[in-house]
Length: 253
Image (tube, rainbow, N blue to C red; front, top):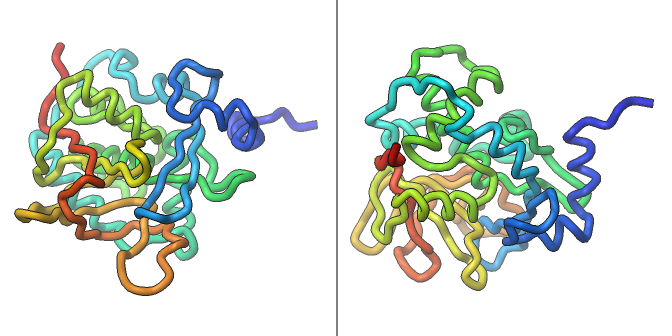
């Protein structure tokens, strides 16, 4: 009999009562589950993580010597995100799988597809840094991409599959903002005050923001319920926007 892998164990526990109760609770159980929503009124999708594993991948404490900081990270983050606009789970499964592989997450589980709005953002951030450091391979390995995660956490935002964890870290490090800026991470609350979606701000207008978002719909007419794609969106600066994470504020030593 084959030994179970971390992914198979995670896959089997996603629908468990413990995982379901772990939503928005940082202390209960080994796993944490978050419900994410790509648009208002659409059915939520879940992502379940092992917080210890994510900490091991992203914590700045795991990196002995920090590499050069990208002063133009926000602009680079937008540019790299734009390359994936139009990708979806049906036509570009391998790319979406890569987003999730970065954090040891399955493409789907017993409850449906794994939500990837935050995981996708983390992936493009890691890719942006890999290219900034001069690693020009067309598709960097997951191992190489993971080397960027602690640097992104220290200098820009916490790369994690959970939106709530991104916000908690931003508040702790003084990166939480109420006004948008190009290259900032935008965080939405589409359902009852819970942080459940995110994206990157591409441009800012007086009443709207243009964003690039992962695991959303294309925002056009027609059936938007399936989502699952990377899309450029124009959204109103209103109550559905919970706030922004400043990506140009390094953490204090």
